[in-house]
Length: 78
Image 1 (cartoon, rainbow, N blue to C red):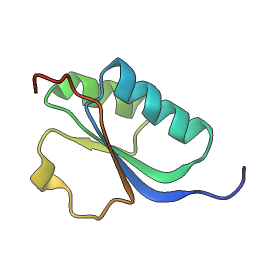
Image 2 (cartoon, rainbow, N blue to C red; image 1 turned 60 degrees about the vertical axis):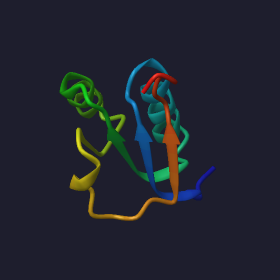
Image 3 (cartoon, one colour; image 1 turned 45 degrees about the vertical axis):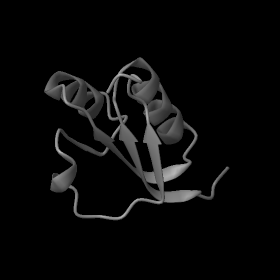
């Protein structure tokens, strides 16, 4: 698939499920930019190191762009 479906995707929660979805979006070239949001800065750093997200933050107000798709991957208790 050579055509990207989404310009930008935000994944909230970069644990096992969120990071796996980010990796799949990148590997299958479904999104031009994949962003991550997580309260654990270590998760963000690891995902950036592995290049499965373009940029990550621990606060939603730090983003200055619009997203075509937002995926919430956090525990129900949060």
